[in-house]
Image 1 (cartoon, helix red, strand yellow):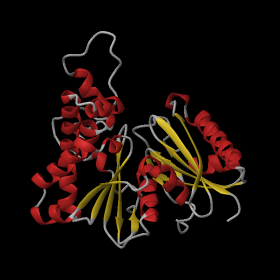
Image 2 (tube, helix red, strand yellow; image 1 turned 180 degrees about the horizontal axis):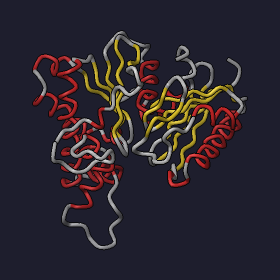
Image 3 (cartoon, rainbow, N blue to C red; image 1 turned 135 degrees about the vertical axis):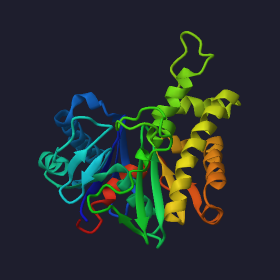
Image 4 (cartoon, rainbow, N blue to C red; image 1 turned 45 degrees about the horizontal axis):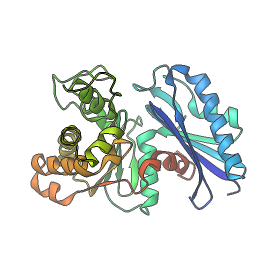
Length: 307
């Protein structure tokens, strides 16, 4: 391959893009706010600008770009089917429009599928059943069986964030109630933290990052909020363990960087709720690619066999 591949993780709150060389080494990265209110056309213009800027940063020509999008994507056409997190994108031919702007090959898929594809590449495509969850503003999911992504006939498999966990729970963006999204995502964690008593006037609104930092300093309330969120995610994962009997569950996204008490609570709740045998067998672990998983996986879409 001559030139670089750019992978773009297009989420509800941030755009993270990386430039990779032919061996998969990250040469440069850029991150900025999504500004989803801009709408598809302006955001596509910005994505094209980011890709060109990364090529300049890497001092190499742009050979192609991949996008992991926070919504349902028709992998063959690269068109958005729908998105809860990015309204206004339904029907947008993402692959076609970005390719027109850049003049290179572009591939597009759901962001969680992209993240798990990157994870599979990073692990050497083990012949395992692996479930991937991106835990950020919302919660996405993906499934790999015997080392290959399983997308389902419509490309919508793995939408674990929209599992109903509490039938009369808080409302979710999808219109349902009690989804895993509404209970254990970054948005849910921050909403719960704001609602707890004890906030002082003038305090900055809590974020997952500020909660993690506070917990590391010994703040018991911050640790309890993170443990509570981890237990809720673990309750959802227990269902997946019972259904899939996976070899491992890989967690990526901003919340997954919390580690510590949050990850302990995830594992403890799975052990408490899932069937004993698959619960003892499964490994629940952070992504080997960390925060870059989605962007690196998006670039890897260009190396995957033609959809």
